[in-house]
Length: 424
Figure 1 (cartoon, rainbow, N blue to C red):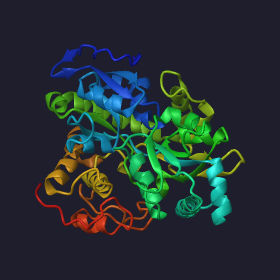
Figure 2 (cartoon, one colour):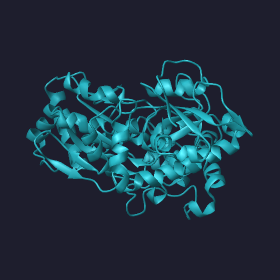
Figure 3 (cartoon, rainbow, N blue to C red):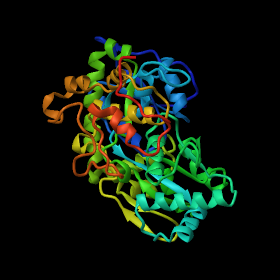
């Protein structure tokens, strides 16, 4: 049976002990479609089958989720994939160690610009209604050059959190088009559910967030979707299940049962035959509180790009399980760390690289599900070199050439070439 809490900030409910660990897990989440696996585990019996009850708490910001996990108000949390990496690096206003043994899947993000800004891109650069992500980024660069020449203020763009996939994907997309995210635009933090309203009110000129909020903005006629996560890096992890390392060490059986429950829920979420039931659950006010029809379209990868009827279908827009989407691969944590270095959030060092990789725990995943459920390739691999795993600018990430990778970008915060990481 699912128990829903109000998110009022009260302390965590006392754990019910069986053996070594609690049966009731208090879990924080943000109202996004990429919380599907966690919600499905609670709503459709996967947690109960493993002897667990998930006490789901809807929260309003990633900073709240981070703090409430650190302060032990949550046992586990729906987190942005870079949050455990940042936590293990001691970054942020309230750093506290966090790890993830399970990714909640891939996909779900998109970049939306105001219809006014997109129309100016069409006028300035002559792009078509069906222009790709890179052409859209270059068209925005042309508009920004025109705005500077006219003495106009730079656009304000929203993302969800400084240590987020949204921030790094937005920056990657902008930089691929020749735009410096730190000089040519103003990046601000906006909670996902508020992005569409902020765009409509003129408070921001664009945003990068998870589903369904891009679709909500386009359906309202205030935004134009110009790029999706799959355009930037299809294999990028999106959200993860975060937990404190000491909690995981104290409750190994509970962690294993949780991973088994989430694995079952992820397989169920991946089946299109279950999407109607999943959409109905997600649309509930306790969870996302968005129109069920929009959520159905999002799950199917059917994008309404704007209010003019332009549409795009993205195959596997969400991958909840297929292709080892739940595997917490350390080389992906290292790519996240590379972007933190690229944009001046972290220093390059072998010590920090090891800390970043330690945030992703494939050993706990294997302990719960067995070696037969894990990928055949190495935990630390070259990213971006396989079909279906390409970065939008054609680059590859080789963790063994960390400095060369970052130095190869023409747009980055670092003003000088970095050397290969050494001991901190």
